[in-house]
Image (cartoon, rainbow, N blue to C red; front, side, top):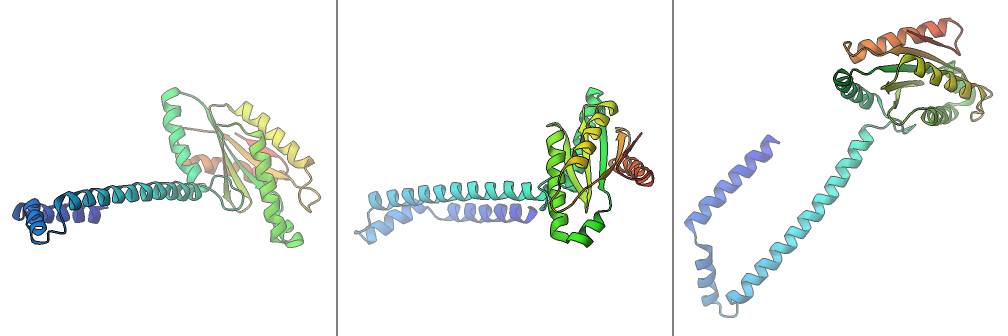
Length: 233
């Protein structure tokens, strides 16, 4: 960016010096007198049409570049497999929500979800089946969460959900529905599937990492309680 600005400043300074030293209209007039087949009333409109053409070209290229930038930004926020938000996006959204929470004094919750024994699915059925299972699970999570909730793939078979403007009791109701749907859903080439969940009430005075760490500890306890359950705090 600084190099671009420097180039623009230098280029315009050079042009200003040239314009100050040379009167282009007089030069153009003298040229037209020297070559009578080119008259000013022909050359000036030609310059005008060229300028308009260049302007149209620039506007079109700007629109295309803007679209490409928006698409690139969208891709940078999405997990390529599931289409969910990725780790970077939910981290950014957490900080946005914290500012709003502090201003409005609202509550929020954080969930971390892990597929039980996912390695066995990959080993038994192959990674292609494992990927399809993750996509199906992602669709289930999207179907039961609210519009304000941020559902993301945290990594591997782990998912993270940020639930703004809600309390822990309401989130636990959603967790129960999620586990019921997962337990009864017929996944691709998999007889059954269970998930373990860590649920915490968010704390705006903690960092994102600290909130996630508390949720991760709850998930760890759920795993040691036999899996297919949730632990909240």
